[in-house]
Image (cartoon, rainbow, N blue to C red; front, top):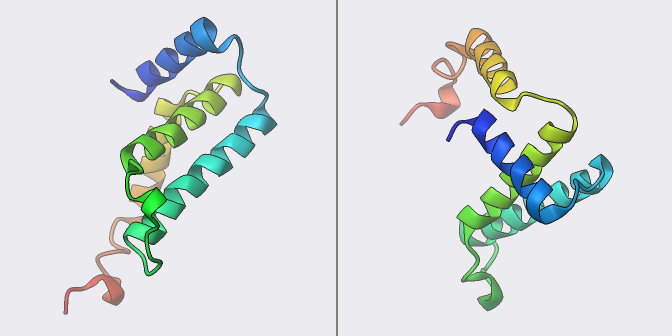
Length: 110
């Protein structure tokens, strides 16, 4: 599934099951909440914080999918073709950073 198809799938789902989109500010708050859930898993599972029993069964993939769903909702309701925006973004990063990371001594294996 490409990004454009994912946007359509989300739009179809919203229209069938969700009644309507939440407003943009509500979706922004939901996105922040979902990113927080991802951060909690990563900080406890891969960072220095200890993982609580209640967090051990949390599925990082599902939490990332929740983030993606809300991002797709925001793109749909603001008229953004996210596939095109992503292509443009990747091109800009490539032009700007084509050798930046290769020249970063901090990224070299020692």
